[in-house]
Length: 455
Ligand code: GLA
Image 1 (cartoon, rainbow, N blue to C red):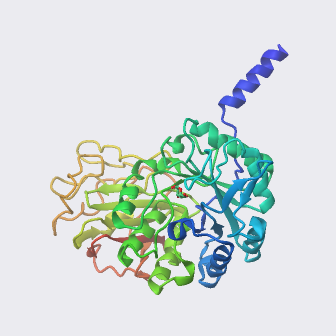
Image 2 (tube, protein in one colour):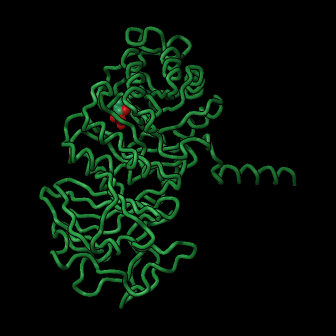
Image 3 (cartoon, helix red, strand yellow):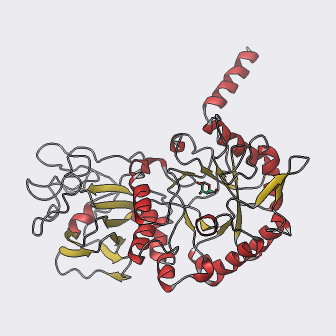
């Protein structure tokens, strides 16, 4: 009998997916700086220490950026005991020295390896050395490990990352575990108990098409994100020179709407005022870091004009209007309607549920269905094909609240313009509305982000 009981307990534990990871970490999306996007393999002790200095002197630390992460190329070989060896030319005092310096600035220290036999730059990977490496990283004082997927050949992703997660746990030092297998094995479906964030897509490049292409692939993933478990659409390119300031503002806004980790990837010692105005927009950062941990959902997708909603704590929300087209758009925005809409909650990531015929009285998260000819239907309900653009002037968005408005959800303050003021996050001003509808100009590749703040 005892034997059967033990077998039952063992099977139950293996099936129930007991948490492997340190589960008190990354309750909001991790913020910091990573060497890869700007410096690639050109990393050194001096560079990392200067980056730590600059994170403090630029005000980035005060804005919430806390991790300094060395990406690929810090390691060069393994010694006779299998210990990972840092490149002595570039890190003459070893990694603990760098970690201590980073910590002395009140920051946290991150490092990089890969689950395969080699990293993406063909440095030694972690395969077969997981427990040994985890102990070594803990002895350096590492706080964050980015673990790549290069050199993995026939390995199983879930078991490989679970193995490293267990190794980190066994080493005893709380370390944020950043899974970087590019979304190839749908980590959002299995990594919540394994790591704290997981890449959802391939590598970002410093241009508009790459950034917006990655953004477009995040649409159905909202339901998987939450405190301690984040979708990671890759690090920021803001300030690296390949996009306009408007495009970088869009990049940053979209990442914040997605509750993405915010890992700056620029040269912190050479930040222009424009770069600072983006990376240091504290009101935008507050939307990313909101304690509720919701990822935005797409409320309307009208091709190159989209509306995204992120539910925030305190029954507030952020709404982002996005123009991905190459032309300027003038859109008639009905703010009383925007006041009523809600982002999808947990368990929601796809299109809005269909409205019953003849309107949607009391449907949670949706205003009443627009009357015929009055604007665009919700995403997923026969939205106009891409390229059709926004409703013509005068036609606008569905006017006002539909019958019954957004009701149906108990315990919420009704969302109306009487209860909320609207903050323009990039103009740094509260909107002064003469009427409930207003034309809003959206430059090419730009966004407007509004926060509905409870009065
Ligand atoms: C992969 C990762 C990148 C970066 C490089 C380093 O491509 O996705 O983010 O870490 O490896 O070689």
